[in-house]
Image (tube, rainbow over all chains, first blue to last red; front, side, top):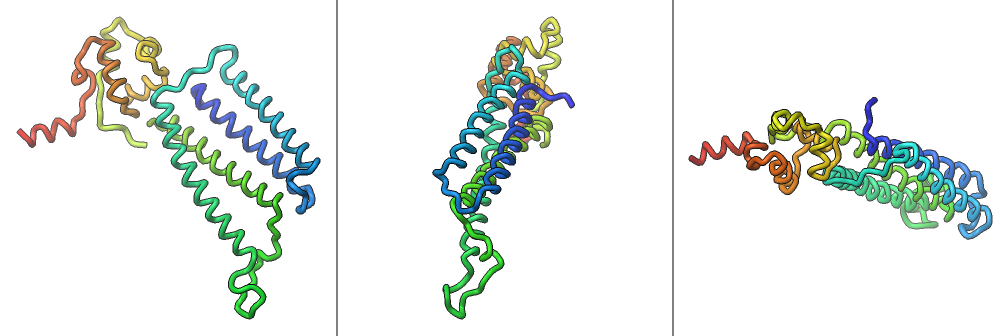
Length: 159
Length: 79
């Protein structure tokens, strides 16, 4: 597959961010659900993610561009990015909307502690700050992945 | 993604300009080679400013480089 450097860069970041998100979620969900966000294990996890993201970003740029200077974005690149941003934004809004409904439904539907309350299976899932953070990170990853995928599609098929 | 309606003569003009490469044209107009390829293949419609820059490289008028067939038809209708 013949890819331009810009497309390779996008593909590299798409894979890298997927791995980084998986790493975060894997470790975050192995912690007890009631772990405070300001705690030692969370600090270590965030620090590790920060360090990996810096190293990963440098490595991807080095692999894609080598010793050459990265090309500056021209009008087509900017147009493609703007279009992809539009898709990513819509994905983000819909995902957050869906998450809010999920969050609300997890408390049950109807008037609490009354015969009018309809308990849902989601009641068994407690949304602690750690889990909300995990869900937000996941939503951001989905949105970013949509952006990268749209960019790659437009670069391949023409825009 | 469909092709644009705007056609162009860039390939021909490059040929008559001493077989100017896409990379050379890209450098003159300040874009990447991929963008020149996309414009030439009618997969991307350049901005008006970029279109003027391309025409200027070949010393041509805008209409000699780019053509919009639908525009031609409506012009005929109006006449």
